[in-house]
Structure formats: C-alpha cells, structure tokens
Amino acid sequence: MTDEKKCVVILEGTFNEGGMKTKEFEEYSKRSNANGEANGGKVLSKYVIDRNLGNGNTPHFILLVEYPSYDIAVETFSNEEYKSIIPLRDVAFKEVNILITKSED
Image (cartoon, rainbow, N blue to C red):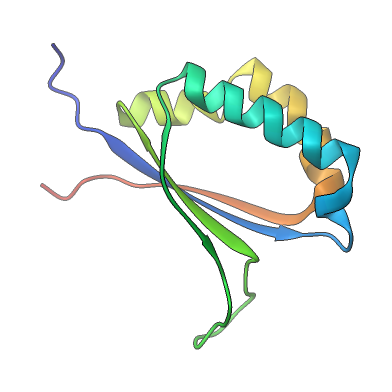
C-alpha cells in the first residue's frame, strides 16, 4: 500500500457556441472519461454553474474528480491519449481549466 494521498482535480469548462452538440464533444467526452477511469479517476460531483458573484469568466460546469495520487492526476491529463483528444476538446470548448489540488495536511 502507498502513502500517497488522493488528489482532487477540479475541471471547469466553458463551451463554444453549440459545442456541446458536436460530434467532437461526444468523442472527447467518451475518450476523456475512459482515460480518467483507466487511471483510477472517480467523479465525486458535477455542477452546472448558474451564476458568478465574483469577477472573471463564468464556466458552464465544474466537475470534481478524485485520483489515487497527485502524480496519477498529472499523468492523466498529460499522457499521449489525453494529448491526442485536445483537438476535439478545442472544437467543443472555449475554455477548459484543469486544476490539480494538493492536500494541506
């Protein structure tokens, strides 16, 4: 058993106009989910954003995904499979933020 702590990744997405209805989004979503699951990712929660009371852009959604470790989380979004689907992502999304957290304890 490893001493590594689990890691939560916060995914924020803002769709391009009509991006959610594209075949590229369908393929990106399928392959991104499979890549995440293959690396031990578990979706903790999904949120549709209704309103931003702060500054800056408002994403359309946020996902919280837990990975077995920080290193695995980083590898999931930098491996060859993920890199190969970035062109699909770019058709569907105006902006995607992949925020990798570190535990403070």
